Image (cartoon, rainbow, N blue to C red; front, side, top):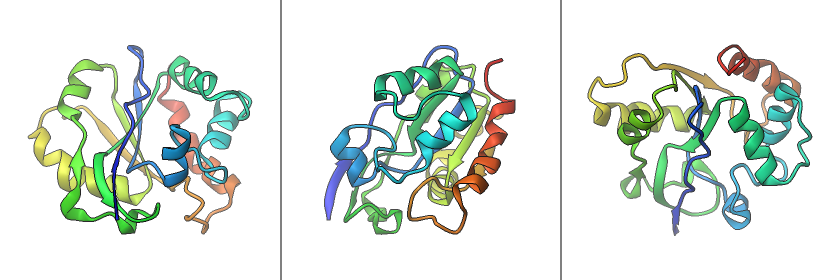
Length: 171
């Protein structure tokens, strides 16, 4: 079991959509990049939705998200976990990110899209109670996980589901 810390958000002042994961995988932590596992579908899906090359360097991929009003963060600031699976997170070790401060600073965010069920579960159980009915304008949507561990949907099916983001991003 390892103690791990997440990343700061990818966000810009014009963000109006937040994509929320749970915690970076071991591969992501090693690369110091969101969705760094080579088989994670996140970057191929974002490139399909927003028309950029998924092989761009990480800084340019982040810039493409920001340009489209998309922020990326994780529900957890830190936790103890063995391996990369969300199911291996030691629940008593969870420390959540400061969403009250985040939403107060980035007032344009209106939509939160969960990248899988674990992010949604942590948010509902640990974050919403802390927000205490603040930010009631936020709308929440759960999307299929981009993780290679979630293999019940093919990439094209995941892309179809994730197209829901496009109606909310900057025009």
